[in-house]
View 1 (cartoon, rainbow, N blue to C red):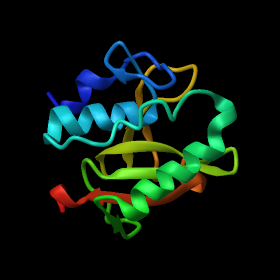
View 2: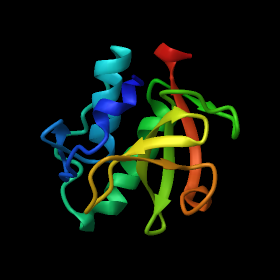
View 3: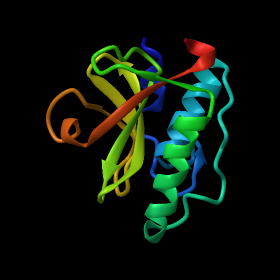
View 4: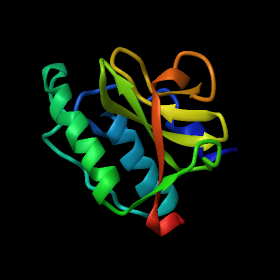
Length: 136
């Protein structure tokens, strides 16, 4: 069984960081801790409400640009890379690559799921992909 199977269907919870409830950064953090053994900054308290999307965008962008991340060229994504998406005009959503073309993510109002990012509704929103230095 693929590692991603145990992460499908986890409930969405703004600011959530556990299997009882998580948001998009929460699922990435959980996967990195449990699958890769790499702890990520939990960003606790910074994913609180939809009104704070601009703060979230700055935070996500800053984590990728200045944290332990290496930018991945389009089409070179691999398992466990983090994808950064534009939502509501801001770079404020992330997902984790399951395999080329598929990502695991959590969005408001839905349980965590695997969706295609290489085409369909997510492709126009895809801004960049990042690989943690520990996995490079």
